[in-house]
Amino acid sequence: MKPFLTEKPTMRGPFILVLMSAFLGSAAAQTHSFTDPQAYCRTVGTIDDPDARYTGRGVPDWTRAAFYTPDQIADIEAGRQPDYGVAWRCVGGEVLACQNAQTPSCMKPDTDRTPTPAMSEFCRRDPGASVIPRVVTGTARMLAYEWICRGAEPSIAKATPLDAQGFVAADWKRVAPQ
Image 1 (cartoon, rainbow, N blue to C red):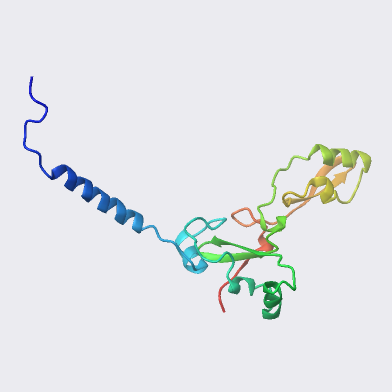
Image 2 (tube, one colour; image 1 turned 180 degrees about the horizontal axis):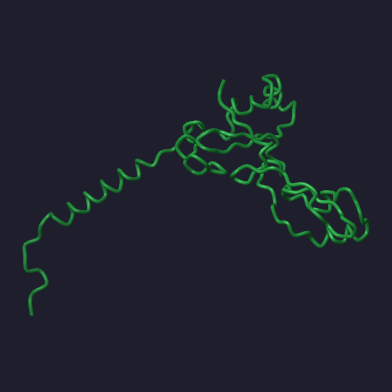
């Protein structure tokens, strides 16, 4: 039987470990973080919500300025006016923003074309209704469709135009610093 260690120990093992650590460390250092939404969007292209690579302020003032006057922004920051919020995302390397971020209008709408039991019940009680109210259709998410009652059956009256990522196109606009 051969002895376990037949050669004189060398520094090759520790050297390889040091080399691997340096390589892995440099790869980790190449993961960029961004504080500027424009630079972030140019890099990521299209993303629904900023991810961990974006480390800047949630909503920059120049994004808010697309929806509010300087006086309104000052009033929001001073607590004299409610802050309805602004959401932003990246599309094709550009920053798009939506006002009223706390409401369903900035979220992807529900595109399910199947009427809910509550809609069916509403139409049985109010056949021919020209609108099925949101209290019946649900308010957790905006709907991609306007619903009516055709007789006693729920029916889609109109589809809301969506962008390529599935958001309500009219609620989002391109923004940039002035």
